Length: 355
Image (cartoon, rainbow, N blue to C red; front, top):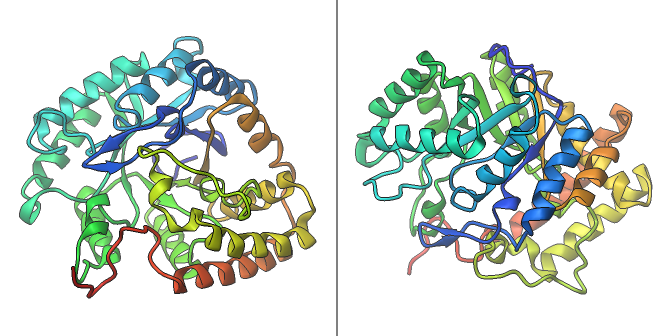
């Protein structure tokens, strides 16, 4: 159950960002590698066969491609048994801003059409930038609440503390994202939060956001539980992958050989506790997230049916809490080592930097 929203979901959900394929937005790579349409659809169907009822997408994932592919599954299953989540804000189209109220309605209508449905279970504000002096915030909130009153969406969602993507390219001091989140939370009053959490997330940040969500009766959708594959043991620092220009991973330092070596060292330590196989790593990574809150569900991404089968079948029985705690400690040290070596994005300017 996603908190007080009343929306029941499977504990494991399918994150549908990757099946959007290569893409750019706002002048930045925001997609993934190439994904065959047949593989994406087969992956969605496999997830359904394995009991997944929760599917998370966004209008900007492949600029509608992810939604349209998911719509193929929706057309095959009972609508009251599948929970659909999408987002608005990062794609402005011909509007002046992604949170222009008229644009939001048009995007919702297009999203519903793409997904072959008449309502969404959760509709998210995809980011926290509402124009100068938040000039679009109140009308955007009004639009969202109107969608809810009309029965077009069941719950309003917003992201946990994060940075608007283009802000990572800015030079100089950056806004306090925690304070910004609290300010927007009070004004938006969402029923569901989207939170990045995995074994490479600072523990104090994880603990505080889940405590906050529980205290406010919010459901939580946990994304990137496998740190976009970095926690699965499939990345070899001796043979780093080359990503295309529209793949967001091309900007991330954690996919570099030096960072992969640090992560691999930590995963080798984890293997001594949980087992030698990649499935053992997936199991502990997912369970580390599942134990965060009774009001949370974990979104696992995929690009083909084999990945879906591996990620879901690997979950298995809950590991002992002592093991989870020890693994978190190991990977927290890895996270500190990674952070000490620089910003996550290779083109991100540190605070106080000069051009």
